[in-house]
Length: 295
Image 1 (cartoon, rainbow, N blue to C red):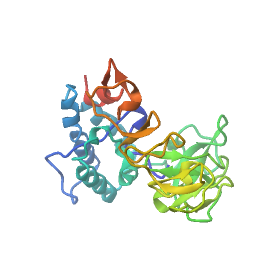
Image 2: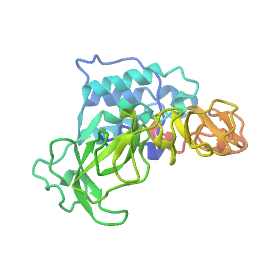
Image 3: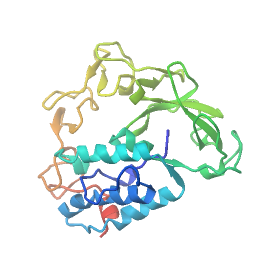
Image 4: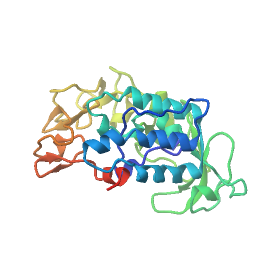
C-alpha cells in the first residue's frame, strides 16, 4: 500500500494503551518507536494473563524496522493517537492500523542497485527506488508473474488505479494489475477506485451510490435499498440488509447493530465478541495475542 503497514493485522494484532518511559519527538528513532509501541501492549497482555515482556512484539517490529526507513512525524502521530484512544472500552480489541498515521510509519528500503520498473521480481527488495511513490513487487494478475511497480497516491481523475485504501488496508476490487505505474485511491483523501480503474471523489451523505460500501466517504456506507450514502448506524439499528453498516465498536449481530463484547464477557457466538471468537461461552482473545505478548 502507501507504506509498509505498521501492524501485522493478519496475525490478529490489536491496539494499545498508554505507557511510561516515552522518548521525546527529537530523539525518537526506529528502536525507540518499537520499544514504546510494544510497551503499550502490556496492560492488554496482563488482562488476559499472558506474559508481559512483549518480546515477540519487539522482535516482529524490529524485523520490519531493519529493512525500512522511519517517518518520525508519522511515528509520533501514531503513538499520540494510540494514547489518546487508551480509554476506549474496546481499546485492546482495536487494530493498530485503525490510525491512519500508523500505516505510514515505515517505508521499506528499496535496493539502489535493484531492478527497473516492469522487471520481474520476487520481493520488494529486488526493485530500485523511483520518484513519486513506493516501488513494490506486485502481481500483474491474481495468479500471474510479479513485476516492479511504482504505486502512487492518487488524486481525483488519476488512473489506472489498483483499488481503494482505507485504515484497514487495501479494499475494493483490485484494478489494473499490470501497469508499471499505478495509483492507490485513499478514502482518507476522499477518494475511491471506480470500476473503470480511476480515482474518483467518494460520495457524501445523501448522495446517490451504486456499489460496495467504500464508494462513500469514511464513516458512511452505501445503503443498498435506497442506493444512497448514509452515516454508519448506531447501536440498536437494523443491519439485516447491510451487514457492514454498523458504526465503530459495533457489529451486525442477528440483524441488529450491537456493542462488541470484551474479553471474558459471556457469548453465544463469535458475532457477540469484538475478537469474533467465542470459546466455551466466553469471548476469547484474538488468536494472535499470545504470539505478541509471549506465552
